[in-house]
Image (cartoon, rainbow, N blue to C red):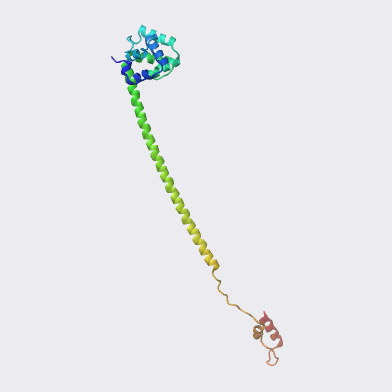
Length: 214
C-alpha cells in the first residue's frame, strides 16, 4: 500500500517543511501532536484514512478540520500535500478526499507535473520564437538603415551634380553681341539733297525730309 513517503514530491516536502507546518499536518491526520521527534517519520508512513467517503467518520473528520484549523493553516497543509489551495470548504474536501485515496493524489501530482513540463516546453519554445523574431527585426532594421544611408548618398550626389552643372552654365562667358553705332553722317547720307535745280518741288522735298527723319 502506497504511503505519503512513496510520493516523491510529498516526501521531499515533509523532509524540508518547517516544524510548525509538520505539527499542523500531523494534528490534522492523527488529531494529536506527540512531543517526540518522529512526526516526519509517521507522516511519511501514513497510508491514508481507512474510512469510506461520505461515511460518519469521514464527516466527523471534516468537522474536526473545520473547527481546528484556519484557512491559512489549511493552505500550508495543501502546499505540503501538493494540493491546490482555494476556499476553506474546498481545501477541507480536497484534503479529506485525497488522504482517503493516496493513489488519486499520486495521479493528480503526476498530471500536474506533466502540465508543468508542457508549460515549460511551450514557454521555452515561445521564448525561442521571440528571440528569433527579435533577431529578424534587428536584421531588418540594419538593412533598412543601410538602404536609407545609400539613398542619402545617392541623393547628395545628384544634388551636387545639379549644382555643378548650374554653376558651369552660370559662369560660361556670354557671347559678344555685335555692336551697332549710328552717326549723324550715316543719317545725313540718307537724306535727299534739295538744290532747286532739278525741278523737284520744295513742298515735296520737305515731306521727303520729314519721312526720312522718321
